[in-house]
Length: 121
Image (cartoon, rainbow, N blue to C red; front, top):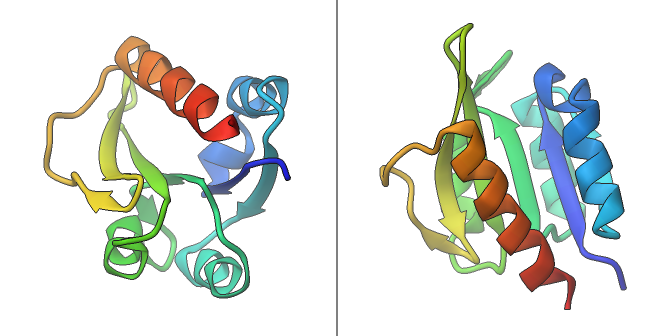
């Protein structure tokens, strides 16, 4: 079975490079535009990876952390400054790491690649 990723927010859904990377690593992708839509997906499906905009139309993506703690899910939240997008690690295979250092785009790309390869096997 292919690993599954949930991409949440308009920016994630419109990120063709991110989606292409996931597909190239043989991941299945699902999409949600809001916290409530993501929550509905999470109630029926297990995801190995969640990539979400930190600020969603109906609240903060950080509200997902407690329900995913103890799962096998890795999660990152994006926070755009308009110039650069910072990536906030939230969960590492179900262990909370929210509040650890933010990642620059190149650092995130490296961390994401590690996660994609690790969780594919």
